[in-house]
Every structure is written in structure tokens, then in C-alpha cells.
Image (cartoon, rainbow, N blue to C red; front, side, top):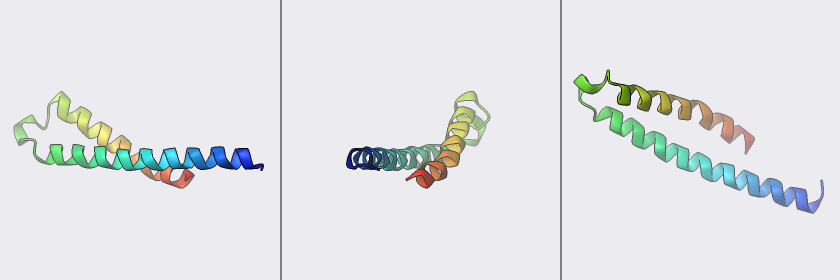
Length: 68
């Protein structure tokens, strides 16, 4: 592997690492919002979408961390 490819891989790894950090923040904010949602709204579409997104983020983070 030459120097240029190593540099590119390093840049990509850094970008993925930054994405993981951002995804963790978004996930935490969504979990907090879900916890503060009144029970009578927890069956609504917005809450269900938030839950699906949080679950997807939770599933993706380890995969991204493995790449780095």
C-alpha cells in the first residue's frame, strides 16, 4: 500500500469516527426525547418513527466502529 492510499484510508477512518460520534449524540437525544414523551403519545407515528431510528442507529454504530 502506498503513502497516498494510506492517507486516504486514514481520512476515511477519521470521517467514520466523527460520524459515529455524531450518531451517538443523535441516538442519546432521541432516547431522551422518548423517555420524556407522555405515555399516551407513545403509540403515535412520530414516537414509532423515533424508536425505529434509534434502533437503527444502535445497530449501525458497532458496524461502523468495527470498520475503524
